[in-house]
Length: 143
Image (cartoon, rainbow, N blue to C red; front, side):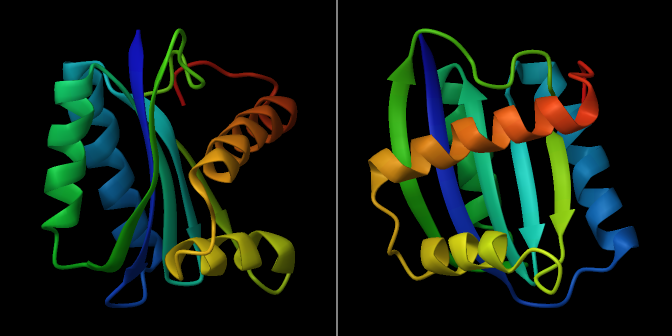
């Protein structure tokens, strides 16, 4: 059984490509060591992230994220046990979405940060993200 956690947060500063690449590199390196997988979306100063793995490892990663001063308005949208991972083999998938070209994705993140997404819908979003990413990336493992 695996633990899954979905959260959303607002960043305290605009994140450029260098900032995001640094976060992603660190997450991939650290998550691989402790068996945490997932997906991270960055949408106009908002993060939407799915973490999965052993419960203690997922909770530890989330505590580190929650104490990071680059995050504000952090909100756990869902926690659940699942028989399998959604993002098997991905130390951390990543996508940067532009609100001008994907306004619906921005609305999802904005709702999440405002606490308007219920836990069941958060898991549906995680599954949608996984399927979208697999289709558009040719299902490359290790992302």
